[in-house]
Length: 330
Ligand code: TRP
View 1 (cartoon, rainbow, N blue to C red):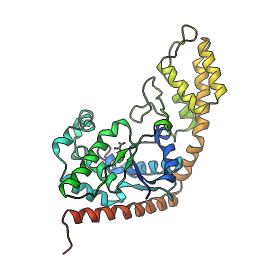
View 2 (cartoon, rainbow, N blue to C red):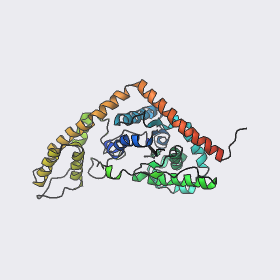
View 3 (cartoon, rainbow, N blue to C red):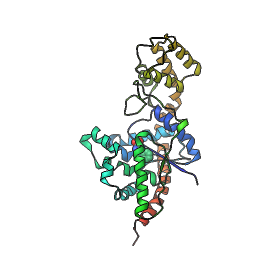
View 4 (tube, protein in one colour):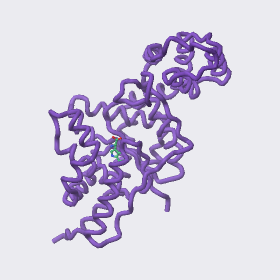
């Protein structure tokens, strides 16, 4: 029996280069080794983005971008969360064994209370319960998540264990994190510090047009230049070199490193080269995104097929859960 990998992404924006090198590129390989579930967490997006006019488009964007990165819907199960009502039902049931106190203490909740004090909805509070339902409904045991989601995954483990304890069963397995470790390439942002992230406004999206990529790269933070030979570049310049490492040819990188070491670097020229290389790197993905986005019929077929596969697994788990909890047909 293959191990089960699961990952979800909220439909609140575009996938960026950091998502690609941090996760998607690895998923493409993993889909052949494991039973993989990839989905668009559109219910989760309602906790922060309750905008009906954008909903469908956002979901479509993320599905198209997953596909363009190389997720094969005939191999992995690629679906939209809201197409699987079994998840909502399991979420309802799990809520009965989730405590308000522990939910209020999660850091992601406290952060959201700070960020959107005008909209502290119950969905934000129970966000970890819905995420637990996403995961355990397919009995996933490998869940690749970033640092910011580790606590939510810990909660999922807690809910799974608690279910087993309360009902005296050995039903849910504990979902573990999954680290790409060696295979992980960290992509820095363009604002001089930290990693690329969609909420940071420092990201290069996979769907960005060449002109947009060029603009963003040309505006990336730099400094006044090295003051003495062979100096270690500060973070903003390190970041540009790091982006070159993924996008540029070795001789190009060596050339600019030498220019820097000899204090002859011209950042404008380096960024222009970097922009060219990033545009070349992302072009095939961008083209696939455009093609897929334009193919209504293909998208409809993929989403329908994904929902069907996901519901097959989800309904089996839900049926067993209800039986364990004492629901019996009359
Ligand atoms: N909370 C995750 C995020 O914001 C998205 C998500 C929802 C998820 N359900 C999940 C991730 C289940 C992994 C597993 O990134």
